[in-house]
Image 1 (cartoon, rainbow, N blue to C red):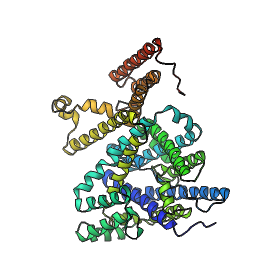
Image 2: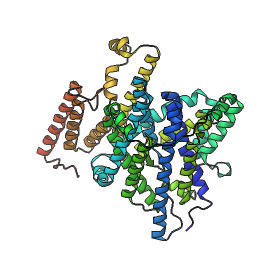
Image 3: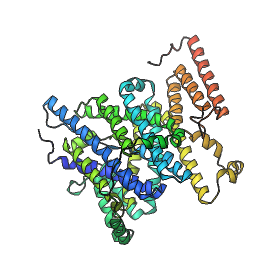
Image 4: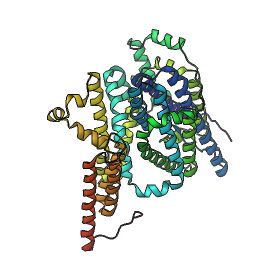
Amino acid sequence: MKYFVKSDWNGFFGLFTNNLTNVLVMASLLSVVVGLPGNIVYGRILPAVGLSIFISSIYYSFMAVKLARKESRSDVTALPAGTSVPHMFLIVFLIIGPVYWATGNAYLAWSAGLVWSLLEGIIELIGSFIGAKVRKILPRAAMLGSLAGVSITYIALNPAFNSFAVPYIGLVALAIVLLGWVGKVKMPFNIPTGLVAIIVGVIIGWSSGLMSGTALLDSIRNVQLGVPVPSVTRYFDGFQSALPFLFSAIPLGIYNFFETIDNCESAAVAGDHYSTKEAMVADGVTTIVGSLFGNPFPTAIFIGHPGWKEAGARIGYSFVGGLVLFILTLVGMISVLLNVIPVVAILPILLYIGIVITTQAFTSVSHKYAPAVVLAIIPWLADWTKNAVDIALGAAGTNAGTVGFNLLEISGLNYLGMMSLGAGSIIVGMILGSIAVYIIDHKFVHATITSGIAAVLTFFGIIHAGQVGINQNLGMTIGYVLIAIIFMGYFLYYRSKGEIKDETLSS
C-alpha cells in the first residue's frame, strides 16, 4: 500500500492552503481585532491549533488506511479536516472578544473560549450516539438556515468590506477565487486556486507598497517559539466567564455533528464509506484534546471530500498537510507569514466560504422551505447589526443607552427589538426556522411544542435576553405562549374536520 502518491500533492496544497488561510485569519482576529497579546496568540493558542489539526489528520489517515485494507483498494481518500470556520468567528466575536474587552484579562478570555470548545467536543461525542435520532427531529432547513445566517454576516460581510477597501488586491483575489471555485476554471500549472489568489495578492501587495519590509524584519526578529501545554486549571478559571455563552455552544455542537454526518455521506457518494460514528468520535476527542492543550476552536471534517478525491488526493495528503501546519505554528512562522501575505488577499476565500454555505442552505432543501431558511437567517442579521452599532457608538465614546433608545427608534432603528431578536441568534434562528417548516407542512403539534420550548428558553434568558436568569423577557415569553395556543387551535380545528392526522415527533 502506498501511503503517499504523486497526486496527493494536489490535495495537500488545497487542504493545507485552506487550513493555513484559517490560521492566518484566526491570528489576525485574535491579535489585531480582539487585541490579545502575542505570547498567548502565537505562543499558546496557535501551536495548540496546529496540534489539533495534526492529530485529526493522523486519525483520518488511519481511517483511510483501514478502509483501503478492508476493501483492497488503492484509491481511498482520507477525510479532510481542520478548524471549523463558523465556530472560529463565533468564538472570537461572541466569547473571547467580549470577555477580553469587558475585563482586559487575556488569560480569562482565552480560558472562556477553551470551556466553550470543551463543551462542543462533549456534545460531538454524545452526538455520535444520538445524532441520527436528533437529525430526524430538527428540520434541515432550520439548521442550515441558521448556519447561513452566521455565514452571511460574520464570515462573509466583514471580509467583503475589507476586500473592497483595498480593491486592487481584494477584488483581484475574489475574481481568481470565483474563476477557480465557482467557474471551475483550471489555474495555470494546476496550482490550487487558493494558492494562486494568495500568490497574486503577495505580488500586488509588495509591488504597490502596501506591505512593509520593516514590519517583516521586526516579525522575523521577534519570532516566538510556541509549545502547546496541557492544563485542566484553565477550564476552572474560564468557566464563570464562559457560563453566559455556553447555551449557544449546544446548538453549534449539534450542528457540528450534523455536518460530520453530511460530510461522511458525501464521502460515501464518492465511493469511500467511512463509519459516521467513528468520525464523530474522532471529531469530539480531537476537539477535547485540543482544548486541553489550549485550542479554543473545535475541529471538524471539511466539506469537499469528493473534490479532493477527483483531484487525485489519497491517504497521505491529509497527514503531510497537518504535519507542515503544526511545524509552522511551533516555530512561530504564522506571525511572519502575516507580514508576507496581505490579509486582504486571503479574505475573499472566506467570502467564498460564506457564499457557499449560504447557497447550500437554499439548494439542499426543497424550494417550499425557502421562507424557513430566510427566517432562520434574520436573527443573525439583527445580532451582527447590533454589534456593528455598539462598536460604532463605542468608538464615539458613547452607547445606545446614553444616546437614548427612543431617539434611535425615531431615527429608524429599533435598538431594543434588534437586541432582543439577536440575543441567542443561533438558537433563535433554528426555532423560527423550525416553526416555519412545521407551518409549511401543517405539523401544528410540532409547531406548538417548538413554541413552548422557545417560551421556556426565553423565560430563563437563554434566548432573547442579555443574560441568563428568571423572567428575563416576559413580553417575548408571552408571545411564544400565545402562538403555541394558536398552533394548537389550528391542529384541533383541522383534526375536527378530518383534514389532519395525529402527529408524532418521529413523523
